[in-house]
Length: 200
Image 1 (cartoon, helix red, strand yellow):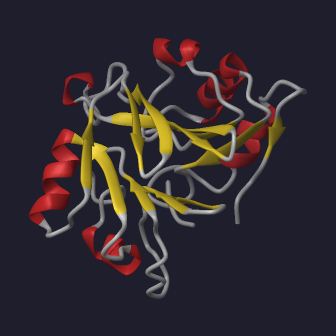
Image 2 (tube, rainbow, N blue to C red):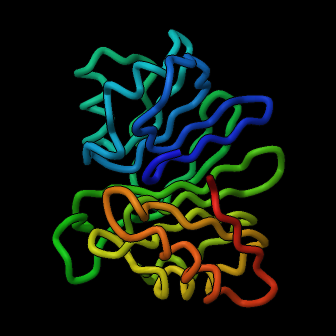
């Protein structure tokens, strides 16, 4: 998976911010979008995944873009709220930069905590280390580590150590931003009780 794309397959197939999708799998049950930027909301890539029954979850500005592109079954969400779509329960977490203007807080873009088979997965999106992370409870976290547009690897490790998941996975590095080494730096910074996993 490229950039910040995550695919989780259980009884349903979940995608988060699909980008640079290979092939034309048309296998998505739910697609979560965190914000409007091209490497997170790629209509071209979403078309490779979406079926008529695919559900879309996105902040209001992104939901409007999906609707304009012809996608149906779109749920628009706001930060710090709880939802249920297609039997899947999830909540939203604010996603923004501190002192940078790439992802302003007032845009109301979001990360997601999604309950999948009894485990909570936190997909942070393009965010910095923010105070709201102190309230996040998750078993698995996906955190951006590439810097520039998001927190860097050291800051992301601090975020993981605050949240205290069982598993922490770095993303958003070595492609649009960051280097291939950022993932290793992140894992070295994790508390010993957190398992760091690098995705291929």
